[in-house]
Length: 267
Image (cartoon, rainbow, N blue to C red; front, top):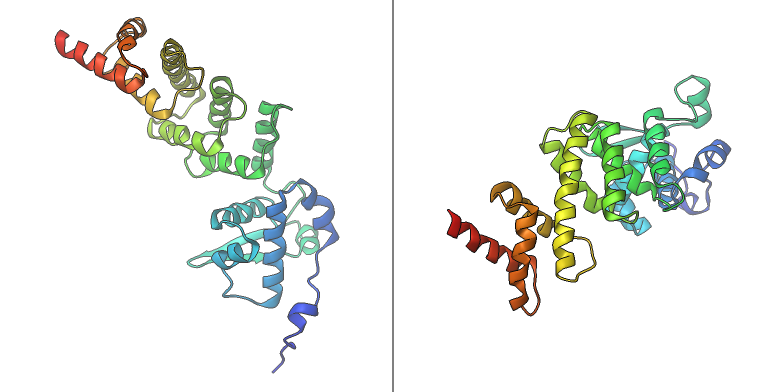
């Protein structure tokens, strides 16, 4: 019976509460704010068929970025995902939500505590993006790793790869730790100490090749095979590096061939 003029969509008003502007917007990533405002606008317009792919195209973002932003606002309790197929999000009136005791400025306190702990690890050495911390928190929620274990893993990565390591690349380590059944901080300490020994050994090989860089994942996997599967000691691997002088460009692949030949001669 009632409908809006088509021009209302362009010349109308989408109310944004001062509470959002004062308490939530300053700490949020700019793209996350764009996603929230876009979602608020489309919810006010009743655009029930407007989905994540549409929003990504409208805002010139990746769908994964839109999903990460919506998860962030879920943790801040400004929106709630009420359906999965297709995903449907409900936007709350912030004032009413607080007056009824359903919300607080702190939102998801576990996430906020984690957020602050991760930032404390880096101190002033690196300004983290919200997407990076959100990704790390997914290792807690989706992979089931304990927060303390994830923090230990991040500290290990800072020590071994430097403060500028990639969170996306670090996800493979998180998945590996989950597959290894790492549950306690004691498990994590033992696993990460072992991983550090592998990395230190691979770096020593690179230094023998006069290469000053971090080892790649493939190189680390080869070093792990040499020590754990083939049974070579760190000293034996470094001694075998002497044979690589015959190569114009010594590499882990070349060294792998040398160690494979040595293994065959001793078995």
